[in-house]
Length: 323
Image 1 (spheres, rainbow, N blue to C red):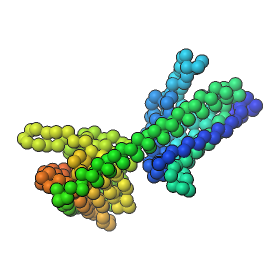
Image 2 (cartoon, rainbow, N blue to C red):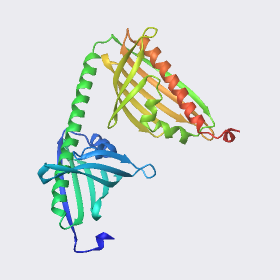
Image 3 (cartoon, one colour):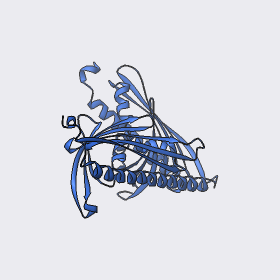
């Protein structure tokens, strides 16, 4: 209603563009399609709280600089986020009727050598606040685009370095062996959709492992920290990278660990009606002298993960549904 008091309110449109050489469209969208990553790109944002009932709404707390940054004040506002094919749309609702409608899109150039990220922001605010809002918002969004570019560039370097190291160390054949492990778990009274509600959530999937105790998220890549058992009560910390890809009936995982160790995992939930079978195929490639330990530890952990999945799904089942 406050915005009906024209001409106190004015509108301005800001267009921004950032070229990111070497970035892939998929990696760029993996960030833009994750609202928590997107909203934390801003240098002003201190905290992001997702609404429990409507997950498309966020409450954001930021520090606004005043008088050239000599002092600052807290600003709390609501932000609506919706994913689109090439990026996202957002709507900010702030104090005194201020509205920002943003459209962010990522497109690969025809030559395929860079991604162009374009943003259009329509601002509507009280006329005497417009200069400050437009200047502050523009600078924050420019900084956010720079942060996006830096994140993608760092990710490219990490993947290139990891891939180069992996390819180099695995050239020493026949030091490396390949083994395949297949596992299967039947879950009675569980529908495929119930199973996929967990298998399509990477955070829940990784938390099923009895070894993993820390999960860091970076787009489609995750850095997992786990505690590996050694001798008796002794254990060691193992940190590795994992790329998670959702597929129709489950997920695929590409695990890259130290010393060239690699695991390619395929997890599928199959079945109709009240019963589902969860099938897993793991192809392990590792140094020959590590292979027995890796197979033993990995198999035990994955069996326990399947048991945890079954237990979690069984808890959701109404006993009357099984009869």
